[in-house]
Length: 187
Ligand code: GRF
Image 1 (cartoon, rainbow, N blue to C red):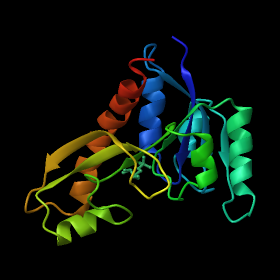
Image 2: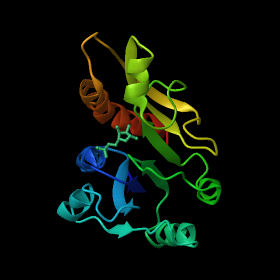
Image 3: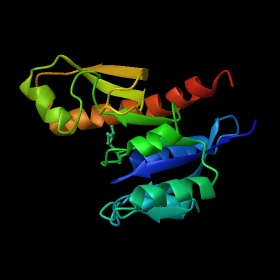
Image 4: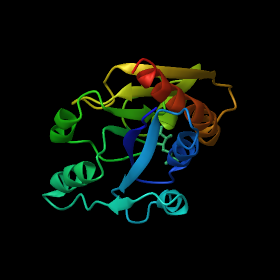
């Protein structure tokens, strides 16, 4: 099996990145993490790129040309698939057009509910009964592309934001790899 060369975009802790790197080291996992892009110089997650000797790049999104820098590097590393894993920047239309149905994102809610930021506080405020995560394709609209996989959990009365995050991320570490396997199952 030829693994798809994949770039993971991060902004923060990178626990999903770490999980994907470990999964991708399995022989039968369909992708290889060949590049990590971070828009944040202080992103803790970069430590995993270093540890597993994966090339990583910081992108300064304040520069007008930053999208071209991203595209240049994606081509340089022959990237054919992109995972957004806690990337806090909205992906440009140009990038989406160049990678149609090749960019996926993980979101900490049961989309279409709670698109955008601060999902856990809004869920608690709304007295939601269920939480979860969604892996979806990225299109021009925020958190709106087709769903690939969703995983749910029940919210207890005593759950606070910290617990919701813990429960969500536990599911994310299963959902992201499963979504990738599902995408490449028949290719
Ligand atoms: C995840 O919970 C994901 O759903 C959201 O950002 C978080 C990233 O966490 N998009 P990490 O950086 O992978 O630890």
